Every structure is written in structure tokens, then in C-alpha cells.
Image (cartoon, rainbow, N blue to C red; front, side, top):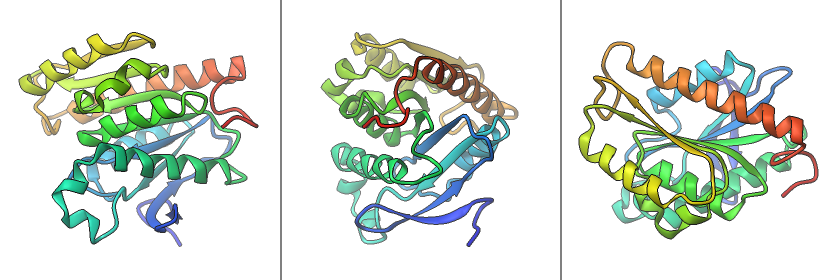
Length: 226
């Protein structure tokens, strides 16, 4: 069954619904982590996913919470729980014949960025790149010091509070390559003309570079790892 330009899949013990955009001759897999109040149907994440697919990157967008959990605000901000759901997706990918050999990256928005960083810290052998869009990496707490995956933080230039929180979080990343890219004139949701296109271009370049490195080195995401 196809949905939003992809195949409908079920992830983890709860069978959380997802959309897999599998590309032929793919050079990597990007798993998306949506923010609180959003879902696998996030139009912004789908926009970025389609841009990544143009670079032969396979994408997976799925609901981090089931319908009942999504109504519980505490669960929507339970970073440890959300990171665990990402780990379920990563395990699912490792068991999928067409995906298991691909380098793997995580793309997180808002609270999903914190979950992505916690998951990356827990599974350094499997995650070879992380991108945060308007994220709250500060919510990852002490896990920031254990993230080894190269991490790109993308923040709108007018999103001043989140920009400050990203700078604080970046200062705690002591064991990885990391960079903060600011989209000038953009607010938190990147609704301004051209802003989301800029985010997609930055993310595409980051994943492509680090997936290529991982493939050349036989590193994270290769066969038999994780």
C-alpha cells in the first residue's frame, strides 16, 4: 500500500504506522523523528524527505506515539520514551533486507531532535549522522556528551530562544563533529519563502557527505553492525 509517496509500514512492538520512501540504488537511510503535536504526516518533514529522495536517500517517517499516547502531553515530551521508539525503528531497519546494509542517519524536529540525539548516543555503532531542524537538543541532557555521530543543528535566525538553546547544547557536545547553521530571516517553523528549501539543502548535503564517509570507511550502518 502506498501513502504520501511511499510504502505504508508498521514499526516496533506497537505496530506504529510509518511511510517508507525506498529509493533504488540508495546511498543511505534517514529516519525522521517528528516534534510534539506532530506525526508521520508532518508536511515539513515530508518536504525534506522528498528532497532527500532526490539524492537517492531512502526515508522513513513514522509515528513516535500511538493514538492514545499522543493525547498525553507528558509522553509527547518523554525524550527517553521517544528515543526508545527511534531505536525500534532502527532495529526494524536492520531486519529489513533492503535496508540493513545502508548507512543510517536521524533527522529530528523540535522535541524529536532531542530524541534523535539520545538514540544516537545509545547506538553510536549504528547512527552515522544527525540533523536537527528547529530542534531542542538541550532536552537530550547529559546524552549530548556521548553523541559521536556528526551533528548538524539548523535554526531560524529569528528563532532567538531556540537559537540560544542550540548554542548551549552545542557547547556540551564534546565527542563529535558538530555545526550550527542559521537560516537568516527564518522563524521556528521555517514558513518564510525559501526557508524550508534551505533546510532541505543543508540536510541533504550533511547526510550525503557523512553517508559517503561511512561507506568508504565501512563504518556505522554497514552490514553486521548493531
